[in-house]
Amino acid sequence: MLFLTLACTGDKVNENTVEQVSDWCDASLGQDAGSREFLHDFAHAHTGFNLFGPTANWLSNNATLSQVIANQSDFGVSFLDAYANQHDAVCSIPIHTTTSPESSVEMYDDLAYIQLGSTEIDIPSEAHTVVIDMLRADHDSDLDSLIGTILIEDTVFATQETRRFLGFPSQDDGWTHYEVANTTRNLSITATGASEKRIFFITPARLAPKHARLIAGLRLHGLAGILGHNIFAATAESSWEGIGEHGLLWRSAALHHNNTPWPDIIPADSEVIDVDSLSALVDEIDYRTPIPSDATRENYGSYNRSAGEPDGQLRVADMQSALINAYGILD
Image 1: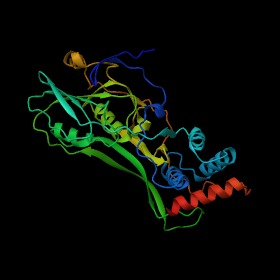
Image 2 (image 1 turned 120 degrees about the vertical axis):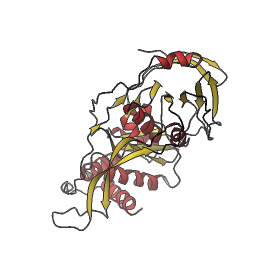
Image 3 (image 1 turned 30 degrees about the vertical axis):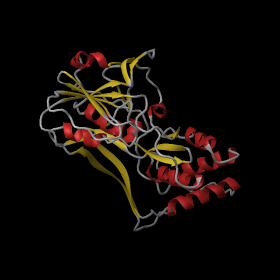
């Protein structure tokens, strides 16, 4: 087991041997709070997971919701925890309330050390290596634009599989003009950089999905190195719904590299972070080394519109579940 040791100068972590987490929920960063009544935002999340989650089995998902409602005395954090505990592809996590400071850059010879925050930043022209520290970044920090200023060629960093609905599909066996299909698209960054640079990221224990997608995607393409914490593919494949002062993160896509699912974990190239010796540390890393896919997480299936019939019972929890589904679909 690795142990956490910190030595700080101001806000800068000088040395940190990280302790990795084993569950993707512990590697995922919450985002904004809910903006509506608890059940309104929960209905939006449940319907999103029902239609766009990997299971794609509305009958099973709704039966599970009925069970959770029947076993919970009120709608709050404990309800979200119980709901998430029924699904490997759902996390219940607190919102993220910390506001990032302004971004900063320091030069160590030809290495630019950037602490990404809330503001845009220019890469010094003399930099040959760029290390982007994500420890102070929040979910709104604009990493995409920063990476665009470093890359010299437009870059596809992942292929994303999602589900597309044309209306809401019929659940009977007959013909319907409402249809659904899994579709793929390339995720890319538009490059504006002038000269080739090596790129490294210092990753915290928790990342927002959009940051996890970009950092892990660049690493899988051999375009950047990772220092610090591992990245979980499930985090990168997820969408967020704030519900009160808490929220649900749920897998809403599948990510592929070279027609192969991303590995469950994209490991860090180094679990040791030493800002005072960054040049020596990154010189030892070859991030072009391939990471084999060992994906065991749930496959992103096709939507099952003919999943079957409910069990025929009509309990109070079933009626509440039906109302949640109706609101979520019409929302």
